[in-house]
Length: 346
Image 1 (cartoon, rainbow, N blue to C red):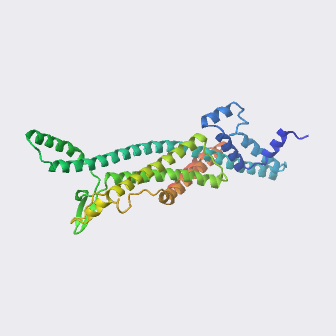
Image 2 (cartoon, rainbow, N blue to C red; image 1 turned 45 degrees about the horizontal axis):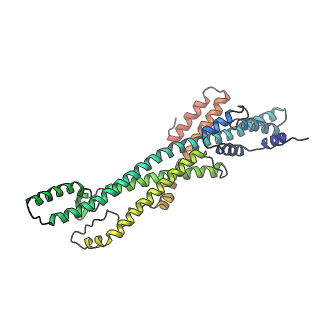
Image 3 (cartoon, one colour; image 1 turned 90 degrees about the vertical axis):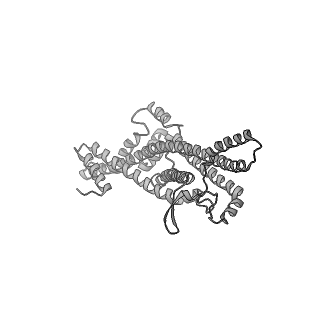
């Protein structure tokens, strides 16, 4: 009579290295954190842990497929066992590598996004208060005082307002240097610098997300491989930068509604300089999330996924060579991989 345990054993003896790796990822994702997962498996035996059991079962699979005792059978069994073991080991290390990298990068990205949001909040307040101070100073300049005391107070107020009117994000001639007739090189404003930092961070975070998805699709049949806590950190970072972009775009939209008429009048003046932020009226300051995903994030993701896989494959082969006991083979393999990576010939 076939017992449930025996049927399960028969099924597990037929699982591929990829199926074992997917089972490992699924088991890990049952727990809220990687630490909880590790604590749960440590309660069991080493041999039956999700990390190690696949190695023994793949060895049994090789024996089932090449059961003979002839030299060619032994050789085929050994080669198949090594192949299956190496494939699973690589996939297992890939799961560990991706989780480790995303955990580090998502945490750093979250901190950077929080700092950028704080800076954006400050810039918006500076912008609003600077414009208000400028208009107030213009009004105070024209105010006719009744006596010496009022005049003294007026001068004090103008000095106080002057400290805030310097905060100005609109176009000015001082933002650029002349290079020749009708040619000027312009320096980026604080807003433009903020936009470039934000776009770089957004591209980096979306690249991480896309790299994980690409690896999952290619090596794990689309199954998720991030632990719950790491996945939540990445999702949180993605949501934060999306909110950041939406908030900034809304800020530009509000400015356009409030000041468009003023910009049109200023543009008709002799110098053509307006109080708009450089690039604002042309739409070059707007952060386009979808364009970032299709462009720089996609390119970064492809490179990132390739780098992670190359590193894992190199280390996995080194592990297998070290396990074989051949002196110096692992080190020689790693050195060869580095030479290929940097294009250096021996």
